[in-house]
Image 1 (cartoon, rainbow, N blue to C red):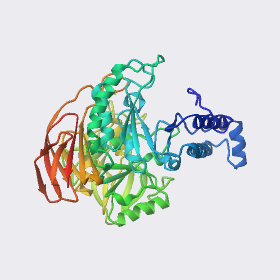
Image 2: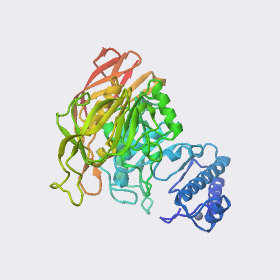
Image 3: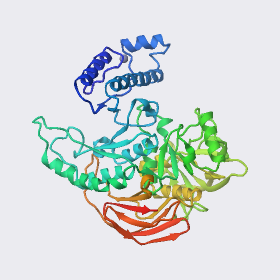
Length: 537
Ligand SMILES: [Zn+2]
């Protein structure tokens, strides 16, 4: 509705739209409806004010207005879906807002599937699709990845995406359990552009060849990450930076993970991650404590686990008392002890302000901090950036209590801001401490993405390896131009049953395998872009 002036669903537009959809339903044999650009509108028009007043909602209160807008959307979608189903019970129905996240859990009854609009060059970036699919694939409906054939975004007529980029985007959809959709826009002359369909055809032929190993596939995951999106939507209602931080970091570490909300089933995961800002109410705190007491592990950072007012930890399993914001920032982790592997024995800066905590009896400090000589303020400065370490102890930086590890700093937001390698190593080392036997272990550069899916109907697992490097060549967005081969990748997969055969698919060439305890080992001689390896039981 509108371009881009959005119309309120509480105005007579609602009735206009209902009649319009009814007419389409009566005139055509409809496959499906894709309602586009439907957003919650925190509206205070004449009609909304009237409705709010009747329900005792304060139109001057922004938070109440947002909640009212969301309820308006839920009601309108339910009404539309009921209307479409009356005529075409098998039609697909999707309401597009450019994003699918935790707010969609309540909307799910009005949807038949999820379409994940995410054009990496169109403002979404390369981290958006993996973040969304890792959430929607836990919701029980099919997911469809949607990119575009454009160099930039919608409306970019007479432009083409690089072929390697389109391959990566489609193959990543397959690897992460989504179906593929590539958007185009029709020239007003009504003729399809041949070069566009040569490009899409060249990629879709490869998708078609891969389909038998992707149909009905389900991700095998060790780790569940609660998304801060459910708990913290800033005034601009954007996806919190920690979301992109954990998506990138855990992908680079080749951790097999899903993205969860507070309603998800935690029992399917061996480790839960609470990144940076997962506030806990009593109910969620009980659910998480319960999960840990039944053998689950926890990796928590910064403000996660605090009550909604940010005053104290509601998670008993952390074994920590909360003392407030850290006195100094930046401060420095003293790299030694059980998480120091792969890092030099020195002090390493943590740029963002952390939290001050006191370990309770039984909790073990895994890494200490040092503080700087002083905070940089109007009357204290030191050189171009932050003040160096005074070598004096600042308090615990990383603490373990049982199967829970707590980082005082917002490590995921930090990784999204400037990607310090030591932050990734520390999180990786902590995860390995909690999960020494992950389902998938791949020795390959950080730019290689790895996933493993099960195909229960086919009695096999399928490992996906991808290697494409998005690079910021123009200032506007990342592009992918080349396929750069990676050779001799050693892979270990922990399978519940003995692997009879490992086969490169769709090529059909068998690989030599070795069994080592619960793991099947093989070496992929060369990865060119995307490779699937079927493990047949
Ligand atoms: Zn309104």
